[in-house]
Length: 258
Ligand SMILES: [Zn+2]
Image (tube, rainbow, N blue to C red; front, side, top):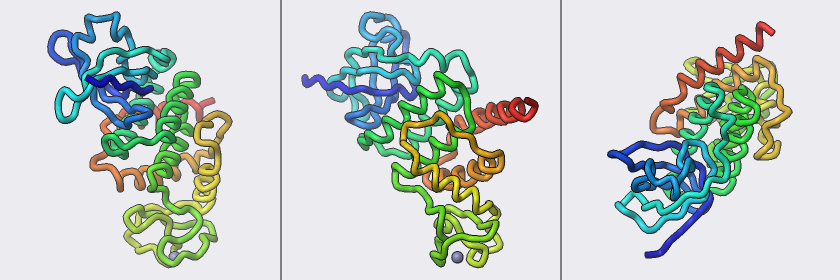
């Protein structure tokens, strides 16, 4: 039986029967994979702690055990990202990021840039904890990498450059809209400066999360714009979203008090 291997990030797992574990991972060389790890919770030698969510690992597997699962033989831990496990807010945002990757990429869709983006995002959260900027940058870059980034500089309907103070946004209507083109039913009105910041942020290096500071307005409006754009392409809202948002609201309050 052919053995394959790839570096991978564990997205989540499910314990099965007495000692087995089913994992979902995003691998560098094969994209999204589901793996069955027989006896994983007893065999410390073959798997150790490597199948914990958000770990960076090298996985070894043989062909499929079913139409949708591979049979894991071994896992080498590269980085457990233990910093994440001390911070429930960072953990919530990590789970959300992993869910977005799973929701936006099809099975076996190989995407090295998305892999490196997710890797850098999780590394950043493990080192620095929860951050509103990191969330915005991750969502923005992920949308761009999978080909869904809205254009932020021009009206999607008439193609004129956005000017003035405000414009509208509707993912369903194609993205940014000047106020002349936006139907009155579009509820999301956004400062043109926010669109400018989002557009400029897309020019920054894919794996750079440190050193960004966005205004409260950019964080608020940018968050709504990206949520609208993401929901347009996901089959359902991420399960981890509301918990992660509670954590972010708490973080914003603490920042405001300081
Ligand atoms: Zn227009």
